[in-house]
Image (cartoon, rainbow, N blue to C red; front, top):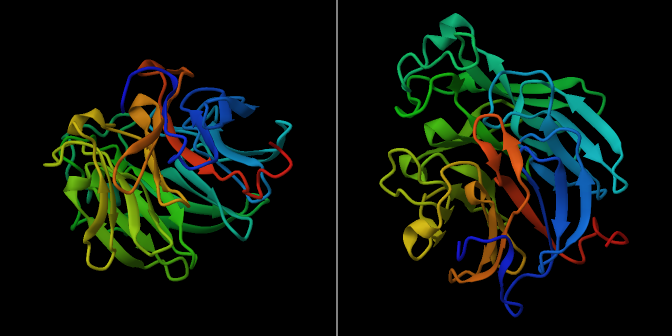
Length: 352
């Protein structure tokens, strides 16, 4: 981050990638598209702020996860109410699962896949290793919650599930500096072109790919130096792009973006700041490779969205000035993720 301010703080018009950036600040009641000058070109009013992970669907509507009234007494990532808004701000589809948290995606078949909390039974919970001893009672109940990948059809019928208790619980342990109430804090469910799903487990420093057809784990990547990572996904070149937060016990105690070969694990591209700690978000955050080859980065804890070239030059920077009220931390300007859409994107045609 270059400066601490708000709005557009830097813009290299010759090298920034044209387009509109979509984001919705955490615990706010607004989702907006801004142009490269920081001007709002469209805005949606929400009913209840939550994690507010959002995207434009193929039909141009806004898909977003707001906060439901019911659900576990947890603030980190909690949403529970998935909605689709048209451009007039009307809700045209919604589905409520009080356990839904962090990520949710609309699939090509029209179904929706998302992450949800579900209580572990006592026998399975006894297998959970690591974490801060005695820290299970976070929700008001002495229970450990597992993450479930859940897919529902447009009518809300559950058609597929995959549970984090399928992970090898002897092989992986919760970070010793993290609480034990979750196994294991999934924050990303990224569908792949073949229908499989890539998942990020924050407190395990683990990425996996789940075979959608068999339920088998067909690939996994464990690296404590990711530092409680977010927003892993597969690029068109079949490399993995991930936001490495650099938190808790990592020797690389700074945030960075890594692109690596999933077979060799070789890092083929990396972004880190100079000075190195000027780019740092210990939680949330995301990354997007743009059509120009530049990379859009959401430094979520600072509410900073910026674009860098392959050489690491910052060519655009925007700092969110919308404040949400978080039950635990008070006023915040955090942004979970941000997405840039090209001017000729079909989802925007006739609307901007």
